Length: 227
Length: 118
Image (tube, rainbow over all chains, first blue to last red; front, side, top):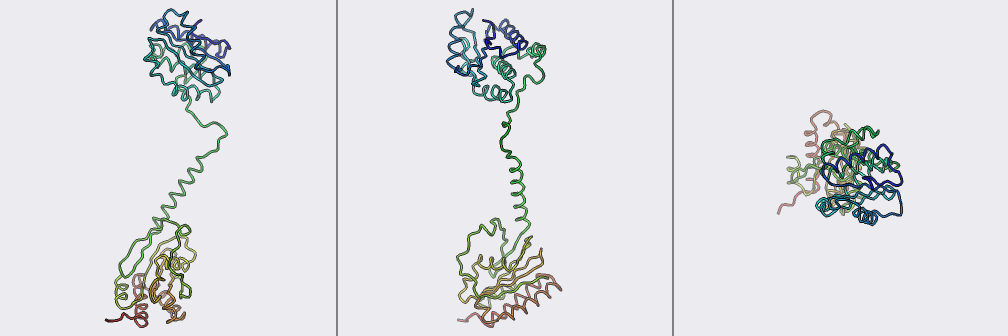
């Protein structure tokens, strides 16, 4: 078994070779073996499958203590990581949830499976403080394989297409609220009585205001006009 | 302010003045009636409160009096007061015009609802 186990050929050959090269170079430098397993099987649950593969792989690996298995299921959109005893520290601190959500799922949601796999693998290598990734030496083989620009920058998660656009309503609501506050601020009123005067701010519109419990003005007089 | 204070000392009636700069106001009378109820001016014992409303933005005014005072004066009095107020507003500062209207109302209230000296 090499560094990449992709029985369904999900990764393009060139990219697979480039990734394999990176993983081998890393292994030579750090003596840490990283195995990438990619699957498209909808019936394969990530966690038990990763355990099963890791146990099988350990038997053939020279140094199972420093081994890391990264299992990615593109169909189930799941990520699982298994590590040897020597990598316990890494496993304990591995942010599976963050990597899954921010990189793997984010890229998959844009329909680029290759990009999702490559970026997730590179993120794992980065978390392993891998010298190849730290020096940026992973770029050259990937570029040669046709994996073009922005390879280290995952897509920013955007709402899926077809969702209801909320922002125009939010902008409209903001303008309405701002307009209302301006209107109230500019419509200052002053009420004068025998006891003094008070500035009146009508924050609550008249149609919402609770009706006064005072008796109604039934036969009072009044007049209005302009000047 | 001084005019209102002067009037309040000489009568049991309640004279109020409300000055506004409200925009988009269609009916000053309706708003004045709402203010009249909001400030609970119908709660005076002899129902003799008066509210003078002036909108400086729309240049409109309204005067609303409670039923106790209205019964004593009649609608003609309010029409005359409105004419005088309009003339005063057109010829002098609105503060002076309002003060004159308040004094006129004060005299009327003093005549019909004087403060009982005990």
